[in-house]
Image (cartoon, rainbow, N blue to C red; front, side, top):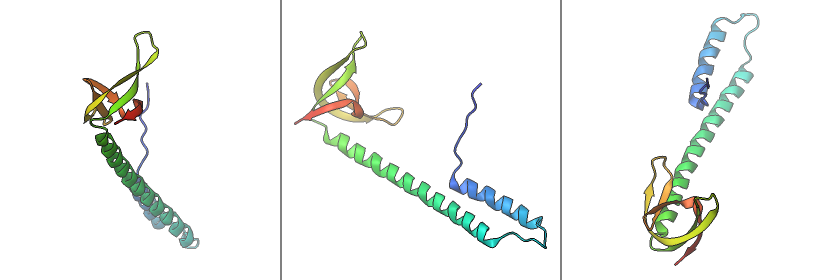
Length: 127
């Protein structure tokens, strides 16, 4: 049996932290209050984590756009690519890119002579 784990987002962590903090404040010893500096530092770390997540999301979107643009620029060009033969060896084939499609898993695929070729499998490009 395999366990499914997911990485919580910064917002989720921050919400959980705030709930924990409120509980601690409600139950703290009045003679030994919590240190405000520690709480502020932890909140600042959550804020930085959230900003990093936002940057990663933005960079990911930019990368997708650049890859789509690059793939589109290959339409009409001759490309060479590696394919696995029936005996397991890699062979190089060549063909013209007719169109670019997005696969079911989100990968960019070049349509080369009725064959779907991953952009990462292209080894050379000719005009």
